[in-house]
Image (cartoon, rainbow, N blue to C red):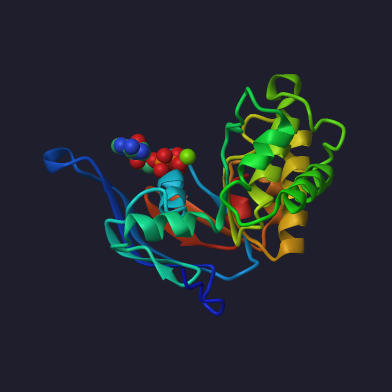
Length: 237
Ligand code: ADP
Ligand code: MG
């Protein structure tokens, strides 16, 4: 796939999205317009049910666009083929609320999986996995299974897994929701530091007021409308 290196990371125009059919059809996203530059760290917040996850999965090329334009790294996803959607996904690291680690694989093996579709030698892969797990403070836990790790440690493995392939974009959906205050902030600080080092763009959905200061920009979603406002910190207090 041609990646246009001058294009913004994410550019969305006049996007509408619906769930259901016929008389049950319900609009959940209204006229979304958003531009995110490369390397920007954006936090999206707003009430539950307002459409944040839906927008995130559209940006992640995980569901098809209904109306409007959504351009990821220079590739238009409106009317994109399955193959274009798949190729776009290779440039994106995903972190979800539940860490989604595979229980029968060790921390090392969970991170390794993310490199399997990438074009790296076994030696290079091993080096990158070790480096990434060390970067999230788990150098002594590489051979542990998820059940033997704390919530914060599991989420740090998920971060290592998302970043090891050096994606251009990280999409994180409430990654601290299952964590206590301290480990939630730790996890996001690690993510932010690594992403800044790699020049990676982050879009992070959260309800967690205590991490809003880590963002370059905060956007607010309510009832399917996106509001770009700098006073959002006051709103969500
Ligand atoms: P948020 O992440 O902000 O909590 P969501 O994007 O999950 O919001 O949901 C937005 C709206 O879309 C909600 O009203 C939700 O009930 C609805 N919705 C989400 N996913 C589906 C689905 N798969 N089918 C039908 N409605 C859905
Ligand atoms: Mg959600």
